[in-house]
Structure formats: C-alpha cells, structure tokens
Amino acid sequence: MLSQVPIDMPEPDGPLATGLPNDVDQAELRAWLEGKTTLDREARVNWWKERVARLRVRAAHHEEQLQGAHAELRELGDLTLQEADAQPVLCLQYRIRDGEHALNQAEVALALTAQRLDNFPEDV
Image (cartoon, rainbow, N blue to C red; front, side, top):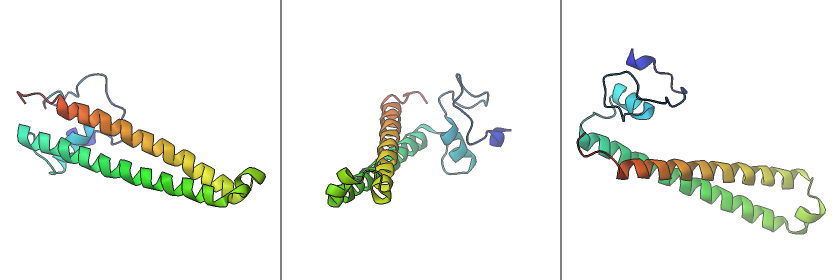
C-alpha cells in the first residue's frame, strides 16, 4: 500500500497514514521504499544532508546556465535593442526567464530542505 503513493501527489496537509514517523515526506518515503535509505535517525539525517548537497549542485547549475544566457544576450549588443523580436533575442530571453524560474525554485527547495535539516527532531 505504501508504494502506491503517486510521485506527483501534492503534499498532504497532515502526515500520511503509514505508521511511519509523521515527518517522513513523500521523497523520503519513496527513497525508503526503494531501499535508498533507512528510517533510523542517522540515515535520515544523512539522507537530508545529501538532498541539500544535490539541491546546491542544481542551484549552481541553474546559476551557470543563467549567467551564460545573460552573457550571450550582452554579446548580441545592439541587436537586442534594435531587433527585440528577432528569434535569437527571443530565444535568449526565454532561456533567461526559464533559468530565473528554475534557479528560484532550486533556491527555495534548498532553503526549505536546509531548514528541515536544521530542525530535524532529536528523538527520531
């Protein structure tokens, strides 16, 4: 029954009725079901630390991609002003917008995960 939790299910308002600790979220539950972690305190803290590390890498990647798109847009120089509707300019503007969104999402996820790790219960 636990394995039937859809991966894209929205976060529930309360704990899942699983018999597991009530602070186990869907990603951690899935990792436990797949044998990627256990539910003892040390393993759970390590799992969350690894999640923070992965999110830092993701945020850094998005930051690099965003900086690259900005640099390409600057290299186009006057074209960006004269031909704002030109395909190369539009593509870069879309990449920048998407990059800003992805970076924002990664930073929010990182902050929430870091906060969760900082507030991890001692009695788990």
